Image (cartoon, rainbow, N blue to C red; front, side):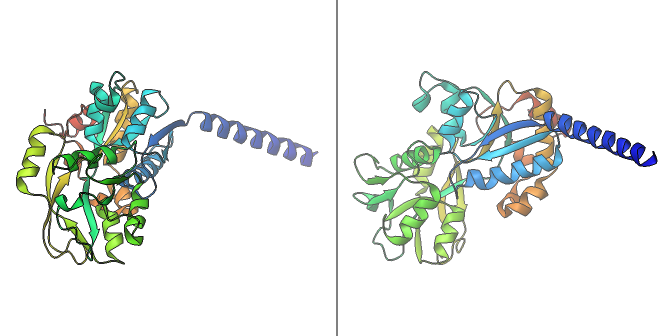
Length: 317
């Protein structure tokens, strides 16, 4: 009799545990975050952000998704197929205003946090005779994915250096990691790469990095305020013993405009309170401070993020 009672009690306990787990799982909010291609900085920073928020908020499960970058992320967000996205502020501006590749199809969103500086540089192998932007004319140049934000940034940067990427070069549309490999094996002669991928190429090949002229940087920023000036010191890249003047494209984490204020508040709080967690997974994130994360870069913040930043005295408006 005691055995039957024990068995019955055990059955009830297991049933209650199963019901509890079922209820708990059903209450977890599943969110998709658009990032970039393999090796792209948007995935490299977006995935650690997702992991650390998931640890801090048991009621949320963010999945970092591979995509072609900013343009695809925003288009998916416009169709409500992405809840969060890592983007270039410039592409975000085009989406909000319904201009450029978003002409007639605006996408509204709110910024959650500002992430890393995003410095792309133009890289060639040292044995190449390409020593300036004008030398790129007629060459095979990696310009990023055809539909991604990197491709738009590449086009803009070439334009402000007097190069029409449709007429003056032989453009190769590739993902970030693919461009690095293509540069190393000689498929292309130059590429726009992230600092991280440039370090990777420099670890096995001698490289040269093209530096901007100050007047071209000033001209770009005056007309495109989503960009900033960024100076890399000598020896920042192996074998590059001179300073490299380049452009900061910026990176923002955004969310759907109509996402609940309380949810965005919690996500923002989880990110800022777990910056150490993010940096342990992706070392460059150590440069993100709460003040930096709360700083504006052209696109408006979501009310939930503003609420958190105001509470912490980080909101400057």
